[in-house]
Image (cartoon, rainbow, N blue to C red; front, side):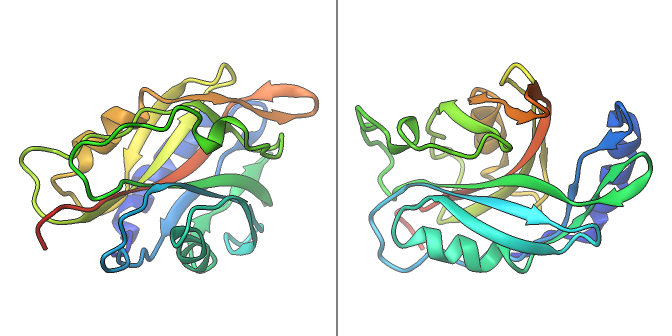
Length: 210
């Protein structure tokens, strides 16, 4: 699955509106996302601290939290993503973002762990990190598997202030966006203060039918 450049026009308009203090946040321009591995029963969160240069290329992707076998797959995907770079005072600038994959197990109903791993993971201060996560439900009108690629704005208070679906429309979009809007984050930090930031998400749904 690939994010289309069709979304770039909307992203550029949003960049004009969001610019504050001479700084505008990066947008996802194109992204290939691989298929879920066959017959894997596990799930959870894999996340990367991603550095983007002034040309919109990924220069590094350091894993923050892993869940097998998804972490390595997500890292391979992310290193090929392209971004509309951040801008400082109107000029392209390097930036640093969170890329997080939530990989839902194939069971329609399952109990969330009492001590989820993300609660004890120490993420870099420069990127936001979830502090309260809701599991997306498997939509009743959906069949099979699917992935939703989203761009989410995180306020300096840790709330998700906006969500944009960047992948082609599908049956899982509503469940993914509504769930992400409920998440809470420890906000990113810049210059020793909490700041608004942008993160990128892949929500993966695996159904019981092919």
